[in-house]
Amino acid sequence: MEKTNNNIPTAEELAIYIKEATVSVTNTYEQSPVVLMVDNSIIGTLGNFSASIGKAKSKKTFNVSAIAASALANGTVLHYRSSFPENKRTILYIDTEQGEPHCQKVLQRILCLAGLPKDADSDNLIMLGLRKYSPEMRLAIVEQAIGTIPNLGLVIIDGIRDFMYDINSLRMNANQYNLQFMQWTDDRQIHIHTVLHQNKNDEHARGHIGTELNNKAETIMQIEVDKEDKTVSVVEAVHIRDREFEPFAFRINEEAIPDW
Image (tube, rainbow, N blue to C red; front, side, top):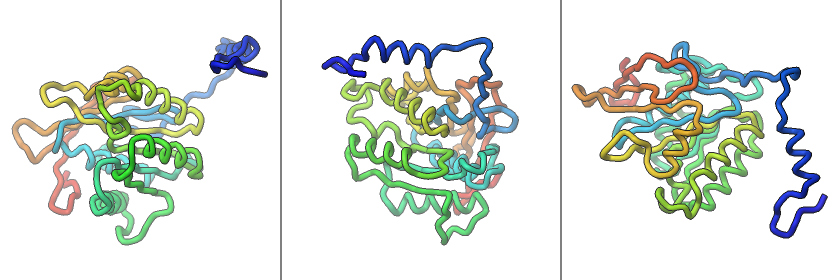
């Protein structure tokens, strides 16, 4: 069927979309498989996305490393508990902010937390450092990786802000990223977890993309430095579709491993 010159779907195409989108009380629909939990609270399912937010130096990257390690071990790390199906055991970790030496340290930390040797690459963990690329190229690389990596179950994007030139600009509409996330997660039946800074002067996630994440994400977790002990970080849910989990705290030692 042909489309008009301005890419507006034809009436015939729209009729097909309407038929595909119709929900019936007589049909059987599968619930999205639960793949990520904090204790007994669901924070992530296949076909959805979640996010971590926090101010600078709150240990957001360590927290998301624990999530990745939990998925890699398909078990419990810190308070995160993963249960990915066998055909969804590959993890894609994307870092947009740091250079290769730092990315390598994060990779080693994930392997260590998962109980694996940190001097050998894992077939189930792929790390991409995208700092040197333009926002458009980063997006293209991620789309290609998500579309082609076999057995993909979890994608972590540490630095969603770096997919746009200006976090408050509409040059790349923030809602487009949410639509992209929803398309990727639905088409590949994966879970995406992303990381975003909070504003310096309040608790809100930064920019238009932060507002859109709050509106659409399955779970938003906040990582915050404890007000009485700066060596401790506290994780809590600020938005969650399932029941809220009890906030938990962690401190890391000189080897960047949690003391508790």
